[in-house]
Image (cartoon, helix red, strand yellow):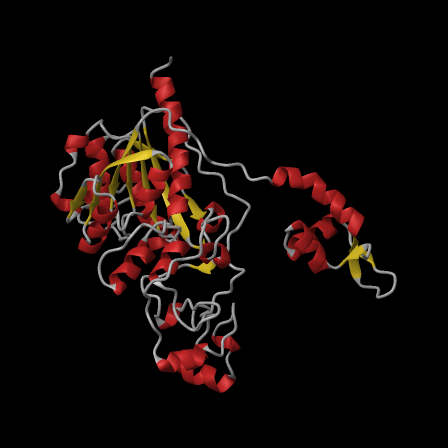
Amino acid sequence: MSEYLSLSEASELIGKSKETLRRWDREGKLSAVREPISNYRVYKKSDVLELFTDFVNDDIDESNFVEAENDYTVLELFAGAGGLAVGMEKAGLKCIALNEIDKFACATLRKNRPNWKVLEGDIKAFDFSEYQDKVDIVTGGFPCQAFSYAGKKLGLADARGTLFYEFARVVKEVNPPICIGENVRGLLSHDNGKTLQGMISILDEIGYNVVPVQVLKAINYNVPQKRERLILVGIRKDIDLEYEYPKPNKKIYNLKDALQKGELFDSNVPKSDGAKYPKSKIEVLDLVPPKGYWRDLPLDIQKSFMGGSFHLGGGKTGIARRIGWDEPCLTLTCSPAQKQTERCHPDETRPFTVREYARIQTFPDDWQFEGSIAQQYKQIGNAVPVNLGKEVGYSIVKFLNKYYNLSNPK
């Protein structure tokens, strides 16, 4: 065994990127040396192992798990097929009612949880005041819509007609200690940040302080997928307690973890139906290697497959993309066979099946989806990954444990 390690060997051994190792070399934290024979820059194995033992002890993941000390209840808005609700349930929170407008998603919720109260229909049609002071959390993945931005301070009335207005109206009616909104990362920059500022000022107006907004990467929360969700947390102003986001995990799961028996699931993915590619697309995608995309095709096929967009700028890395077993999946979309967002199976030239889609979103295998195949893909693609919901759920439980301990000291 050589006493020297190359950059890539050292990187693999200690689980740090090559860029990190180069930076450490510059900083003198782990210095490379010239290998006597080849004169390449290499690392002494003993130096690498010594450093590794120093920080491996700091590298152990802390679980976000916390036991709920009381029965905590959730009212969920824009519930979809239940990704966030199932995650919250796994964290020990009880769903007392869910609102959703899509009839297929409502059928999914009822099929899997007949005991859940599913309020089907437009949120505007419901009055939630019966839940006033009876619910601990209101959650909702409201769609991102622009507001008419009146002056510096946007009030609740200015947002009327948008779904965020409805979210805020329900929070005001219910008056929970904490509310959680989730959205796409793009909300950060939507209308130069004014949309998000508007939401924050509306929550302020109805009596909630907003915790500094964070974008959580699903891959840091036991989800084998590169999905990001923006989390907006409001704490009722009479509560002087800090909310802490769930701690990210260092372990990253990949597609193999999603679809095969292992740490995430105790069996291989069940067989199920799925979409098909047309013959013309199969002929092209057959030529793409795992982790490859359209630029890995022969030049003449690139040009005919991409058409006019061949000459446009931008990487377009989602086109003709085949996922590799040893990487997390790219963000799933609502339609698995669209040209801009192909997510091709590593070994077979086909989109992921419905159950594979559900695994990548960390839904349990017994969670069934209603409606046509296209409707099922849409429900799964729109969902909050279950495991991300669970980790956020633990952070809420932690907050509520502290709140109720302060309110009712033993």
